[in-house]
Length: 89
Image 1 (spheres, rainbow, N blue to C red):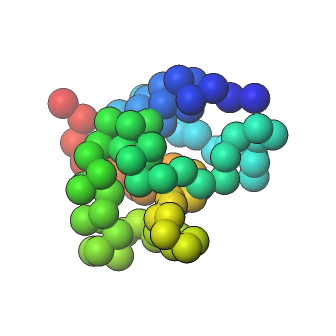
Image 2 (cartoon, rainbow, N blue to C red):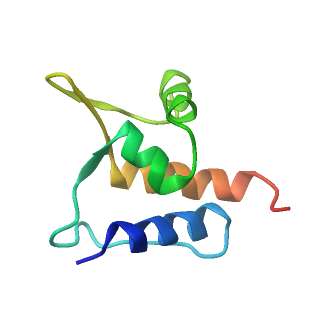
Image 3 (cartoon, rainbow, N blue to C red):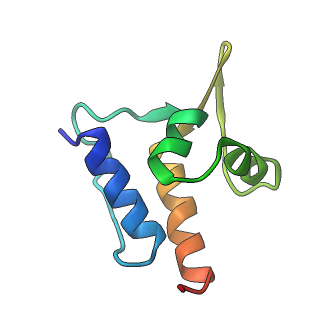
Protein backbone atom coordinates (compact mmCIF):
# COMPACT_ATOMS: atom_id res chain seq x y z
CA UNK A 1 0.00 0.00 0.00
CA UNK A 2 1.29 3.46 -0.87
CA UNK A 3 0.85 6.15 1.78
CA UNK A 4 -0.45 9.63 0.99
CA UNK A 5 3.02 10.99 1.73
CA UNK A 6 4.68 8.53 -0.68
CA UNK A 7 2.12 9.33 -3.35
CA UNK A 8 2.74 13.06 -2.89
CA UNK A 9 6.51 12.59 -3.20
CA UNK A 10 6.15 10.51 -6.36
CA UNK A 11 3.73 12.96 -7.96
CA UNK A 12 5.96 15.94 -7.12
CA UNK A 13 9.09 14.18 -8.46
CA UNK A 14 7.22 13.38 -11.65
CA UNK A 15 5.95 16.96 -11.86
CA UNK A 16 9.50 18.29 -11.66
CA UNK A 17 10.54 15.98 -14.48
CA UNK A 18 12.91 13.99 -12.28
CA UNK A 19 11.21 10.70 -12.97
CA UNK A 20 8.58 9.16 -15.18
CA UNK A 21 5.98 7.13 -13.35
CA UNK A 22 4.21 4.34 -15.15
CA UNK A 23 2.08 2.87 -12.39
CA UNK A 24 0.26 -0.42 -12.59
CA UNK A 25 -3.46 -0.12 -13.10
CA UNK A 26 -4.15 0.11 -9.37
CA UNK A 27 -2.34 -0.49 -6.09
CA UNK A 28 -4.41 -2.28 -3.45
CA UNK A 29 -5.43 0.22 -0.81
CA UNK A 30 -4.77 3.23 -3.03
CA UNK A 31 -7.87 5.24 -3.93
CA UNK A 32 -8.90 5.34 -7.58
CA UNK A 33 -9.81 9.02 -7.27
CA UNK A 34 -9.39 11.87 -4.80
CA UNK A 35 -11.19 15.12 -4.14
CA UNK A 36 -10.00 18.28 -5.85
CA UNK A 37 -8.66 19.57 -2.52
CA UNK A 38 -6.79 16.31 -1.88
CA UNK A 39 -5.33 16.40 -5.41
CA UNK A 40 -4.19 19.96 -4.73
CA UNK A 41 -2.53 18.85 -1.49
CA UNK A 42 -0.79 15.91 -3.18
CA UNK A 43 0.57 17.95 -6.08
CA UNK A 44 1.27 21.29 -4.44
CA UNK A 45 -1.01 22.97 -6.99
CA UNK A 46 -4.02 24.99 -5.95
CA UNK A 47 -7.56 23.64 -6.25
CA UNK A 48 -8.31 26.65 -8.48
CA UNK A 49 -5.48 25.64 -10.85
CA UNK A 50 -6.85 22.11 -11.10
CA UNK A 51 -10.37 23.40 -11.77
CA UNK A 52 -8.98 25.79 -14.39
CA UNK A 53 -7.22 22.84 -16.10
CA UNK A 54 -10.57 21.05 -16.16
CA UNK A 55 -12.33 24.07 -17.61
CA UNK A 56 -9.69 24.32 -20.36
CA UNK A 57 -10.13 20.64 -21.20
CA UNK A 58 -6.86 19.41 -19.71
CA UNK A 59 -8.18 17.46 -16.72
CA UNK A 60 -11.34 15.34 -16.54
CA UNK A 61 -13.35 15.52 -13.32
CA UNK A 62 -15.83 12.92 -12.11
CA UNK A 63 -19.06 14.04 -10.44
CA UNK A 64 -20.67 11.54 -8.08
CA UNK A 65 -23.60 13.09 -6.30
CA UNK A 66 -22.21 16.20 -4.61
CA UNK A 67 -18.59 15.03 -4.79
CA UNK A 68 -16.17 16.14 -7.48
CA UNK A 69 -13.26 13.74 -7.88
CA UNK A 70 -10.09 13.50 -9.94
CA UNK A 71 -8.89 10.05 -10.98
CA UNK A 72 -5.27 9.52 -9.91
CA UNK A 73 -4.45 8.21 -13.40
CA UNK A 74 -5.73 11.48 -14.92
CA UNK A 75 -3.74 13.49 -12.39
CA UNK A 76 -0.56 11.56 -13.20
CA UNK A 77 -1.20 12.01 -16.92
CA UNK A 78 -1.63 15.78 -16.47
CA UNK A 79 1.59 16.04 -14.51
CA UNK A 80 3.59 13.92 -16.93
CA UNK A 81 2.52 16.04 -19.92
CA UNK A 82 3.10 19.30 -18.02
CA UNK A 83 6.52 18.12 -16.87
CA UNK A 84 7.67 17.53 -20.45
CA UNK A 85 6.25 20.74 -21.91
CA UNK A 86 7.49 23.25 -19.32
CA UNK A 87 11.09 24.24 -18.71
CA UNK A 88 12.70 23.09 -15.47
CA UNK A 89 14.31 25.92 -13.53
